[in-house]
Length: 118
Image (cartoon, rainbow, N blue to C red):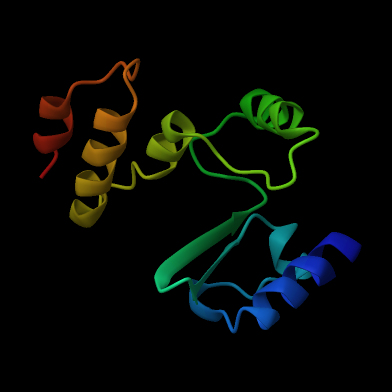
């Protein structure tokens, strides 16, 4: 709850607004819902997604992600894992996946695989 309150305080200071999803509240997060916000920072539109049980990310990988972030001031998800999260079968996500794949040299799937899903 302390962490959640801190996140909500920072989002409030940034005048973040909900995009869609569940409220950023422990009661919703423990059930696996996600919460999505956006705010402006230095004239950039910042979008943030909060998950407690990210889809298409295994429990062991999620545990590894948290270990990898220990000691970092601002934890974040890397390109490969973000691409996995974006595999939603929504057409608009495949453009993002393509950009993520081109930004990640070792990503194992080809762009043609993503475009076949349209």
